[in-house]
Image 1 (cartoon, rainbow, N blue to C red):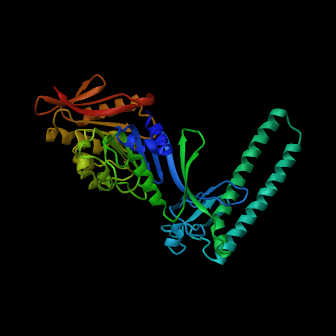
Image 2: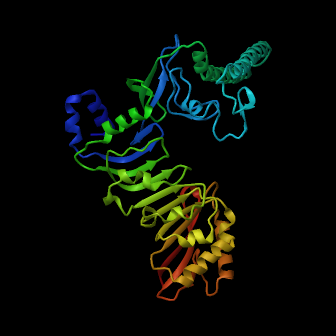
Image 3: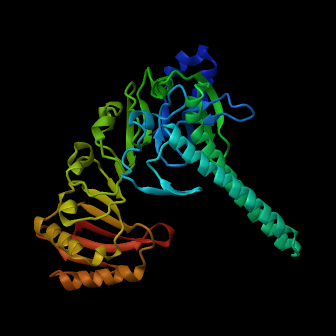
Length: 429
């Protein structure tokens, strides 16, 4: 049975819950992130919602703020986010930076934790509402003017989109201000934790409502335990994607083939090691999405022993960084198009020849951001022939003899989406 169907049936029919735990669970993909779990393309998210606003749908107060993009896990009895209550009303890490929002440029550190700040942002909100009304009146006058039917329909669509954008922005600001109004009036709203399910572009469905007691992470831990904990067999996962989250589940074990770190935070492999069973190592594939060149972090045993290491988003591929990679197979998505004509790439080729890299070693490079054209690949191979002694021209490749009965073959081939990649591989001569 489909894993998602199994999990939902088990949640609705407690009598089969114990039986479901005894049947092996095999997943194509599992993604674990901040307040979310994705199983085979189905998203499960959990968050805190205010549910007692008259005439309004429940409003999510946890997660990312749509005004200042700060992350909220829990709120206090008034609904004030924990990133404010934790830091005394100051947004951490802004250093006085100014942000541009629907309501113009404002100090990102100005959070309405007192009466003066509250009045200031309420004034901005009143200005936004007045401007919205003026814009609506101007658009009404424009639509009354003479124009063709098709032109009128086009203008109506644009006006409607602009109006919805402004009204959504106003509503977001009202919701951001609401907790501080609650505190001023000593009003304690009602909050619930909602667990939602979503597939593709469909609307989210609420599948569970839980009383909020001030600890969203506790509810998240319970959700992980219900879905994956206390199973008779190891959970089999083809691809596990990990985002830097608020807390890491630890009450279950998985056997995985492909591990994907899709985040820009620190590469904390030890944090996730408890949920990966030892039989998973060495990994068939490890993908790391990082915007930094952390040579020290790349020496971790999980990385070093992976059969295929895929690097995406590396800003700078230095010669020491590439030379120190111990994996036999590596694919790197790079950002600098000139890399293949640089001294770094030429030095890497020379070092492979001088150190006599073992047969089967293979690095491939694709260009991140746009297509790697065939013309550029040919120019790069020509430069290699000119720079490396003994390099011989082949069919879409350059061959460089090595000391043993092997050669270093540098070639290019068509990749996905009409793109090309450049490969350097040690092969039999």
